[in-house]
Length: 200
Image (cartoon, rainbow, N blue to C red; front, side, top):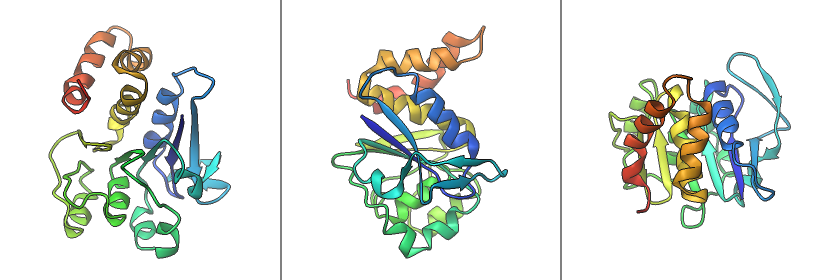
């Protein structure tokens, strides 16, 4: 199981790195989570320089792809050469996006008939792209999920884990990272948003 967390220059650390940490709570030999970028090194919106563990082309073959947001997403979405490197397939991949990452899904044609969650800054861009934006933290349809707000990244990570390893594994991963003294409440609140979008 390879999960590629797609991050471009200007990426939001909260989107990419929180999801990275939660997804790595699964400890299995075939479970691989990679920070996936267009180049060998990518710089966050606050100047954090990190080394990519995979390149965009590898996201095509990943089992799951999570696209975070960033300060340069609008430029990325308007760059045909960059977008051509992302050929995703919702029939065989779990595909998730957070905040402005949802704009990438829209530009790839993956949200044609699917409403989406995003942040307030990205909302008008999504509407211009013809996507109905929901006033909600999380939404999923089939193999595509979106979340709005920096701190919604645990929802996307938990959705990927639940779809891949089961609900109990996702609950355990969230329980581990939740604040002490409110672990059970945190997990229950997350699954209040997630449960309706998971197979019964």
